[in-house]
Length: 258
Image 1 (spheres, one colour):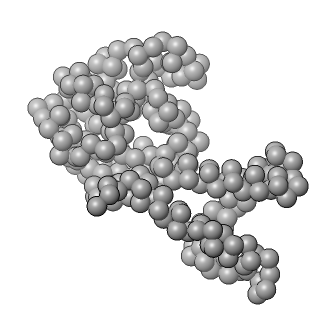
Image 2 (cartoon, helix red, strand yellow):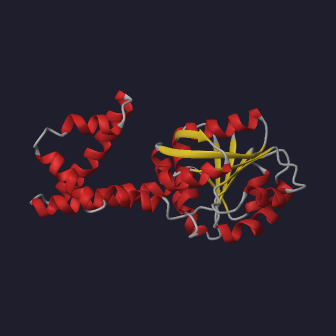
Image 3 (spheres, one colour):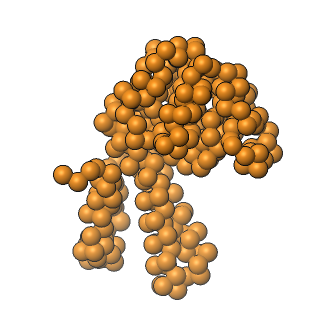
């Protein structure tokens, strides 16, 4: 399979590196405005180009990884090269109906809005997929790509925004917890790297435990919270400080004020 990733920014670049590791037989081309941006991808054996149109013309799947305010112009540039191809758009905040008007007359085989997260670089993304147009075959192609670098969920457009906050923005939210936890560990007497290593392994282990047992988080919390013990005291102190409410408020922050 030939994949062109248009835009070597944070998400486009992470996707290129993740797919290169997961799909060694795929030919991946990454584009950018400046040659210096592409050096690290060339060093990893990926094809690179400063020409978006030629990269797209030679691909089976075109991934649009540019900033939202550039998307319409870049798609207008690519439009003559999209016939018969599958388009994956990482562009957030553009309604699907509007994206389809930009693609009108392109002869695209399928178009999908996809929200991955930065863990795609290490094969651990949670990617949400919304079909703008396509067939069961083109959907299977897109889902196969992102299943190779994590897990996927196919959703309607409304739930795509929820997925963005929970899994894409959620990466930053989870890392902020790790940072706070490590800072607390230092205050308790651990060296900074010790505290960070412990926080990372604790989060990794908690996630693995839930995945392995298939239980609700509260069920595993109950196994740790001995009556009268220090864990329940810590949890209650966090809740008094607004922990759960703050997390939910952060997830809902994308919604416009009524």
